[in-house]
Image 1 (cartoon, rainbow, N blue to C red):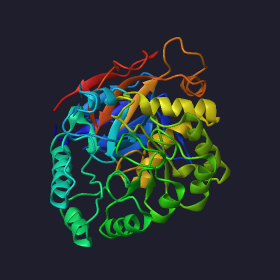
Image 2: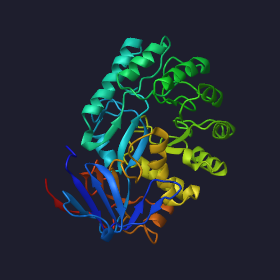
Image 3: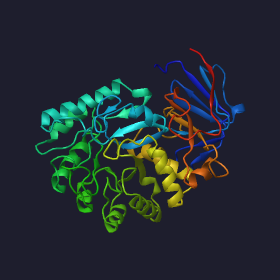
Image 4: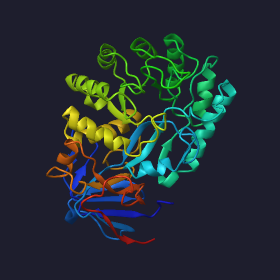
Length: 394
């Protein structure tokens, strides 16, 4: 759907989360977006709320930037052969996620590993998710897994064709740090961001990637630093936190204890801004539509982090680390939001306290580029209050 000549007005916001770890809560009960981009927020009485094409009464619920899953393995459309499941992306939208980032389309049956084939598949993957957005979801895909035989020109060709991501380093034939570093450097030269597999083998055919190789390779993101599934020993996780400045990606499909160790180490280093969240699904553990919300609740409750800060791991931190145009309440950013409230009968005085006690919120609506993409979630517990579309006109 086109966002041209659209004006979104969201009124009666009870709590406005920013995605900014330095200021996770903003003042304001109203937000305006024009043509799919944020233009203003604050007190309703101070804003130009006239001539809205879509007006939403939030009825006191919380508005946050849409959540971002930093680590998925898509294949094509809204289908995953890994679990023979349809509509997993739509289900993820109902978990408050509005953006997905591929760590490699590795579950494609017959995935080509020759240079021509892997480049062709990466470009095709980037194109089909650019041209088709399941349920409105933004899917950043086309993430080739590096293989022996690739040369610098291959990375330039990929970048020229629009590829901006590498799949997890270590899932292909390149298993040594020296070769991986050379390819990661070529990718970086042409504006392609890199992620590395961390920990023990995820499935038969993959292998151990230890801290030494992660550090030697020097990727932009340390993929599933808490293991996917098996984590590295504690001393290696601490070493990774202390020895580089790369993003520390914690995933749902990893080791929860290692996730908390990563959180605690980053906090001691005063580097919570490096933490980003993913699910690492679809995978052997299945599909986790509520995986990002579950990570927020787990890290907040067991990691003793304010819920509003934990949400930043799931949107603003990822936006900044991955240089996205979404995930933050800022003028000019995409109007991608999740509206949610404390779940019915969940303990806690409000939504933030309830989450910090380990409970999931109830999602009432998702908005992408200023357009409503889903309403009451079919997957979260029911919310105490729900936002309402008051006006929609062309």
